[in-house]
Length: 80
Length: 391
Image (cartoon, rainbow over all chains, first blue to last red):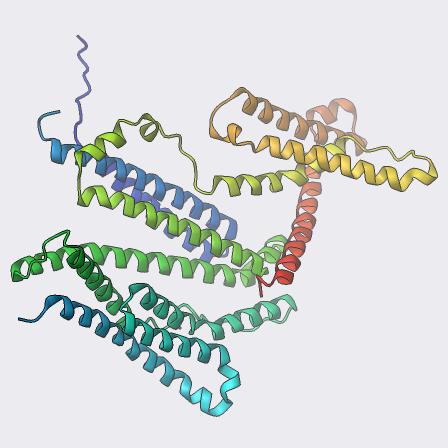
């Protein structure tokens, strides 16, 4: 019996929160890319655009997982 | 009692008439120029406006959402030619060295056909409604409360989508516009060549558009399970192992890898065949040219093999022994070539081993890269001009 037990997190809410957080970071990075482009730092702007789009697609994937977890919960209820 | 089906069909055909407001505004805006300069000056715009008017009549006749959206697209595109012409003119002026003041002409310059777009949503809604009615798949309710509820649901889906697409559109145009403008501020010769070239603009625009379409597509895929949760589909998705154990692959990996191979190429070529191995030129007089060509082809083949080996998909996707070997080999090559450069400068062996001439290597590489980029861009640009892609 280990004393340090990680509390079991259940449900789709953590996934949803993670997805939204990554989405926010992605939007910030995408805005950075415009700002870099404004200062004529072309390569930096394009790289941060790539980073932003990667983060955006990652966040969409996390959100999709959250959506499926929500689907299992919403119809399944307590029986599993 | 009014036959609901006929009423729907009538509404679906009446709503596209909204686009005539936008067409009229557009026609009024080009009328003064048309009167003063004659029809030849605006032939592209005139043609596009006329075509969108014709399609608007067609969409009123058929009530088809597809034709209606093409009408709207044509109307928006009809605003473009003048700004595109000025863009081409500006890039020509930049290349010949004559700079002129820049005004943002197509960031705020395009009038969006608002009435027409509002009509598009109505047409789509009526179309879905009448299709459902025709196939009797769902019961069509005329209860006012139900209708209001459905309308609010429609708006809650619509508003985020419209605002997200407007935000993405603003992002897209501002990034491209700023890229186009940055060519005046950039001082490095290599970047200047890159930013002035219309090929870069076309490529960046195409890549961004592709990524945006992919994003919108996958966001729709994400939204549907939230709106209509289904335990069966969700379980079948979640129980599939390959859906969960997902190795992260950045978007456009193939394109990026190809570009990376192109980027590695000159460095490898210079280090291997210009610095480390100086190809001997002790051929008999008659065969010199042939041998030179043979050498060049051989070095080209070896270098491209190495470059494509480095950026292999397997190496990028995860840790492997090959990756470590590649990294160490690259470090050894850089070190050895700098040591050789420093030896060539006349330093002693010990000193050149301790203090290799990295700066000299960087200088050579920089020169090679800017030459290489210039030739590559000139080649691609002339090719695309020849094919008629770039202005």
